[in-house]
Amino acid sequence: MQDAPFLIAGAGIGGLTAALALGRAGFSCLLVEQRTQIEEIGAGLQLSPNASRILIELGLEPVLTRYAATPEQLLVRDGTDGKTLSTLPMGVSMVQKFSAPYWSIHRADLQTVLLDAVRGLGTVRLIFGRKVSALVKNDDEGLIVTCSSATQSEDVSCRSLIGADGLWSSVADLIGPAKVPEFLRYQAWRGLIPIQDWPSHLPKTESRLWLGSKAHLVHYPLRRGNAINVVAVTSDAENRLGWSHPGERHKITDRFREWAPDAKDVINAVAEWSVWSLFDRPARPQWGTHRVTLLGDAAHPVLPFLAQGAALAIEDAATLAKDIIATPTDVSGALRRYEAKRRPRASQVQEAARANGRTYHLGWPLNKARNFVMARTDLSKRYDWLYSFTLS
Ligand SMILES: Cc1cc2nc3c(=O)[nH]c(=O)nc-3n(C[C@H](O)[C@H](O)[C@H](O)COP(=O)(O)OP(=O)(O)OC[C@H]3O[C@@H](n4cnc5c(N)ncnc54)[C@H](O)[C@@H]3O)c2cc1C
Image (cartoon, rainbow, N blue to C red; front, side):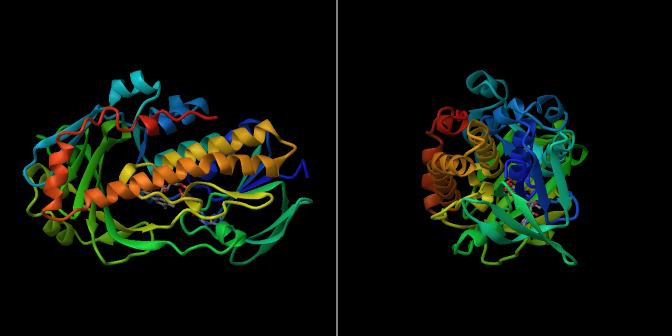
């Protein structure tokens, strides 16, 4: 059993971070990803200091700074009249305060960096085009997991199964019944603007959050400032499953036609939109059993209104690895310690993200009251609880 690998389902952000943290400590891992390759799907992710600190500890700073951008500040603006409501200093201020940067990065870039690091280890075997599909045995004596593709299926003996397989996790379903993710009637429209197409009168090095009625707009730099990531979230009953449906340009420009001129300029500068519908799922009663556990979205999907989906998956992965490293001969004990530590944090972040979603999407006249309060809010301390996280 001690020689059997840790089987990690899903080479997303959480699964790759777990493989890197465990593999660096000398543990043998098998990373199984259902996709046949890493694709350029998705757009920007924000890596606040709680996540960047962990990636730096994993030795990734030199390579990540080749891809990430470091916004100087976040400006919160009124979507209608364009007035600045509040400011959060980022850039140097974040490093001074939290000893780690606030980065923004393309999801595909982060995934590639993690994948290269994992490939360089020698302790992690990667299998693409295969998914974890069944549990044959999971008890104190051992664990056998079925991994299958369209054409073949194989039973693998492993030391532990880590379900890092995202919002629609199959591993979670193998542990026990769970609530199906619920469509929240929000749609996220994503676009990437090459810096040469970015309106010249708009700043290139800051993030902005625009608050309107039943919609909000966020943009921030990526790729060392060579592109700007744009996300416009609207309250909308249309439900499109999956990460990347083509978005109809006329629909989104029409939706923002009465917004402040700078916000409209951002929307109009996007040549191609993708749309994804937002789903939520309440915290699961159980994250694991015996030798199986979950991490990231599989355990606790986070709505994007706090920009913490990737960050929490990274925190989970590093915490789990630390607990396993502490008691390698008692893996089940390590998994339960990890789950007990992570549950309260994940629930707190999930709830804070939901609350932001409700506030950001208020309709008239409550949106006016929200902006009045926002204009009197000091953002500089608001997220200390979130960004100051360190591994325990
Ligand atoms: C294609 C894609 C694009 C995304 N784009 C964005 C974006 O633009 N902005 C944003 O904020 N967030 C995006 N996200 C979500 C964000 O990356 C996650 O919320 C966050 O990183 C949490 O990561 P995770 O590791 O828990 O799950 P994910 O990053 O979602 O990774 C889960 C992985 O598991 C794989 N998988 C699923 N089932 C199985 C199985 N049974 N066996 C093996 N592998 C399996 C999936 O293919 C995926 O690679 C995207 C996620 C994906 C998968």
